[in-house]
Image 1 (cartoon, each protein chain N blue to C red):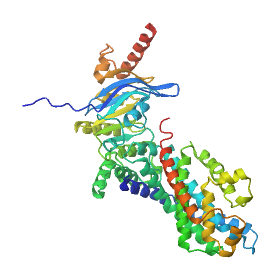
Image 2 (image 1 turned 45 degrees about the vertical axis):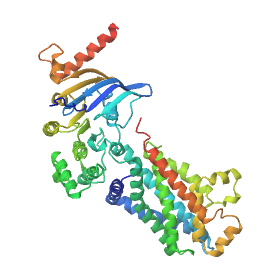
Image 3 (image 1 turned 180 degrees about the vertical axis):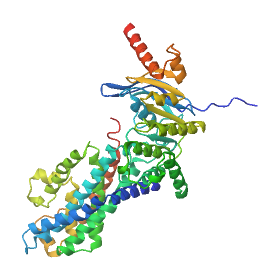
Image 4 (image 1 turned 90 degrees about the horizontal axis):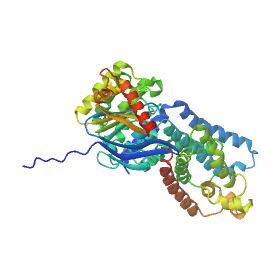
Amino acid sequence: MDTTQKAPKPAIQTKNASFNYRKIKAVDNISIEIPRGISFGVLGPNGSGKTTFIRILVGLIKPKSGTVRTLGRNPSRKLAPHIGYMPQLPALYSELSIRQNVDFFARIYGIKNRAQRQQLVKEAITMVGLWPRRKDSISKLSGGMKQRVSLACAIVHKPRLLFLDEPTVGVDPALRVKFWEYFRSLTEKGATIIISSHTMDDAAHCDRLAFLREGRVIAMGSPDELKHATGSPEASLEDAFLYFVQRKEEERVSK
Amino acid sequence: MSVNNILAMASRVIRQLIRDRRTIALIVIVPIVVMSLITYALPSGTGVLDRYAPALIVTMALLFTFLLTGISFLRERSQGTLERMMASPVSRLDMVLGYILGFFAFALTQVIIILLFTIYALDIEYAGGLWRIFFFLILIVIMAVCLGIFASAFAKNELQMVQFIPLIIVPQIFLCGVVFPINQMNEVLQWIGKFLPLTYGVDGMRQIMLPDSILLTFKETGQILFGLGTDIGILAAFVIIMSILAAVGLRRGQSN
């Protein structure tokens, strides 16, 4: 009996991916492999290249050099039905209601059956805790609520690969816990989640992390591995980040 | 191309506008106010309006549709929803076609208001069946929607978009023959005018709408430039070119 099964291709694979805005290197030579079924955090301060990197992975921009494979293929519109994307801006239609917004995205992601769509829209809005306010216009909502609707729009079609660009900004702690429970339930079902964030609170929830600084990956591993690498048993992820920043600086100086 | 996506886009655009009551009110009131102003600014009892009405109707349709679409599409860019759609299975052509269909409903409402108000309330003399006028205006409206989407690719905010009016619309108004007869203009301007869609819009509409006696004078003085078939053909070509340019232009701004 043939027991050698072909391993599924990683969710994401990049080789020396780079992107620059004129002279500014936003993404600098990133080579990364993200297996399927995990939550992967892209961590770094503002301007470290997180959003640009995610936009490359989604296929919104092409890397200026290097290669990117998303779900084993070149990022393109053919992959779009399997991908969910929550941009940094809430990116919603302010005149429309919560339900109309989520329903629109469900529809363009190919859920044609009305009854099925209604069910999925209800599930997504309930998940973000806004079902009682489903008829409210987006313009009446607070920043955090818009963020929640934006998440509902990204998950409504139950994608296999979910990109979330700073999803927890403006979301209160209790709901943040609920979000993470939901993200975990998705990865348990085999979905892959890529999250960018600058808060270490989000980082602690991820299965694996990449620390980004000035467009480069300065460290990669599980939260525990990264903490242990500092050599201090009580180190936090914040300490770990600072440790790797310092190490990179020292490497640069010694060169 | 996906019919489902086009319809989803169109119904979303329509819903958005319907929920914005003030915009709906302006869509109805603005053309009436503008047309009334122009009418009463012209010398009364001279039949001047009969001569100008076809060109004015086409110009208004182009101006209002261009503005409505341009600003709406710009908002789509600035609020990030365009980026979101770019990451979705919707193709760029579906987006443009969905927008055309959605805005078409409103632009057409506006055009019908302009047309009926001019014909019945301002009581102009016109020839040609209403349906012919109507179908010709459909071409103008589609062209204006594409032009609006395309122009929005070059604007970063509403202020810049509004400044496209003097750049894109005003030259067309001056060179299309609505203000001065084309054949009396400087030759270079006449030549430029032949590359602008409004010239064909005005030329065609005059042939459809003007009563025979006035049309004859226009023809004798060389103010009718082409045959109606040529006007329609060239406008259709503009529609195709503009919709392709609009789809191409969508990508602009996504990579920087």
